[in-house]
Length: 158
Image (cartoon, rainbow, N blue to C red; front, side, top):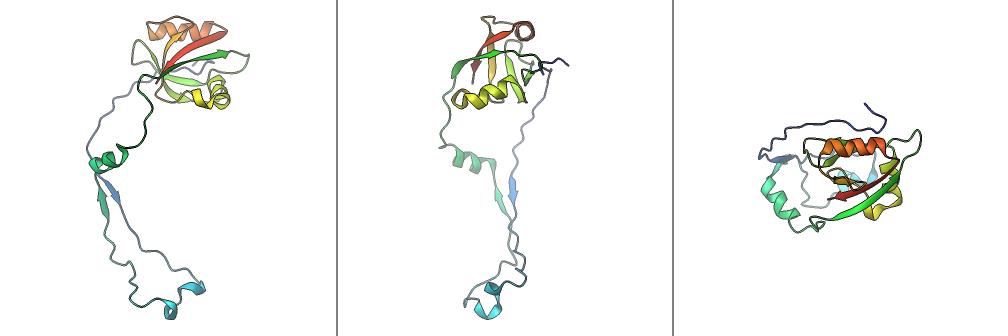
């Protein structure tokens, strides 16, 4: 564990097609609330006693979210961080891709400070650091630069 907050992370994600189950539950009585007295209930109003759950498939969710605006693929920008004593870089990275540092987690530190000061260029989990101070190539070499240099000019790709 280094003071930069870098760690190795390997995961094997498995994707299964499953459905989300959304249960509709009857509401509980409102206690002494005067608005819900029996003689004030509109004629023909029915209580939800026998509510059945609604099944929502992944396909249905995909259809709804397909029209949502997305960020352009391949967006990249430069983030410059100057190290200070006692302040961590504040990121955990996934080193399973040998050529980039994929952000796995953002914690307290320089990256969070950057994000707070530069919301339009904020780094997010899943972003990739593809170069540090002009160095590209092996992810482990990028880690070495992050540990050794006082100023980090990082090329980030989303």
